Amino acid sequence: MTSSTIAVAALGRPRVKPEHRPYRTTDGNVRIGSVVYGIGAEIEDPRGWVWSLIGAMDGSRGPAAVVAEVLARHPALVDRGDLDDEGVRQAMADLFAAGFLEDAAAEVPLPDRERVRYSRGVPLLRWMDRGPRRSPWDAQLRLREARVLLVGLGGTGGHAAQSLVASGVGRLHCVEPDVVELSNLNRQPLYRESDIGRPKVTAALAALRALNSDVTVTGERREVRGPEDLTELVGTARDAGAPYDLLVLAADHPVRIRRWANRVCLAAGLPWTDAGYRGPVATAGVYRPGSGACWECLREGEDARRDLRLPPGQDEEVASPRMPWNPATAVTAGLSGAHLAHAALALLTGIPDVEPGFRFGVNLMVPGDPILERFPRRPECPACGRQP
Image (tube, rainbow, N blue to C red; front, side, top):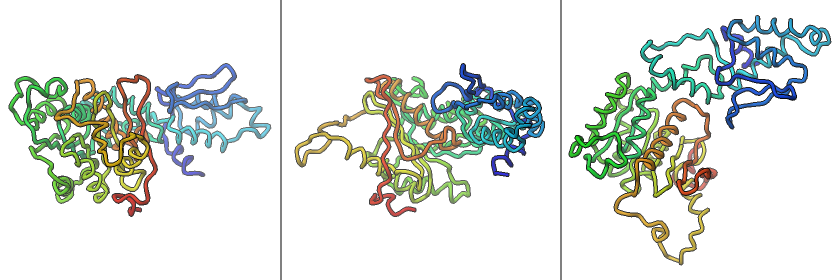
């Protein structure tokens, strides 16, 4: 038996995920997994037994009973040797490995309160999940156990923090040095007018704890001035015996903070994600040490791709000038924060299963033209070139 068939044998009552409900096409094929690109699949079924298999996996039977039901529906195929026990089990295993099946008998090891709270989010994770899992609640359990370090509680970080807490991340530690100002409120809905003059981290902790009391939210008012500060933040958790699973970087100052984060996370073996907005462009990056390009690989790849046609010695700041503050609205900050939270959830749960080492986002000037930057890892990269 293959590992997949062994896994299927352990299912109590296999069934097709509700969001992946199949149908037959006019030419007799089976489409399963919805019509969303990246999820659905089409299976040729000239003899019709695959459709019978799909129907038999309704959550009322064990694997052996499913196999027996399919064979009983197609005696002619069995007599001719075109269908047997092994073939049906392998088809079931392939569907399970592709992420289309779950176990109707799987228990939900969460309190009723959390089952109700996440009853709308778990089906989305189940829908997007293309990995073999017995229970759709497995991903929620991963979030429940996750420990995340979030640096920056401005527009991007505030939106991301709300999404992570609402989604049920187990522990979120927030780091932010600033106080709330009136000019923040056009893009930072985490804060209220009554918060003006208060430390952002103080106001944010109160709002986030009120949003989801089942999540442990902590924080500190602190400025990151160099890589040593980031190393200490990551290392503090390690010293306490509870390392973070992820760094979520939403700060854009100092200018070199992303480079620092890249080096610190490479040294710590810590996955991380970052996001921000520059005018109408909102993007996020996804990084995991040892898997794909690091931040510096992507930066060098993008610099080499662009042709700014600058005179020799001219700084690229001329082509893309920086301002004392970053022009933004609640829309651009919200988009970057949503991208950041999505990247974080994907790294924590594996849903969707993405290959790290890329940036993605949107340009509001060109609706329908998504941004995707992916470059190969550079062997000569000064940051990750010597890593395995």
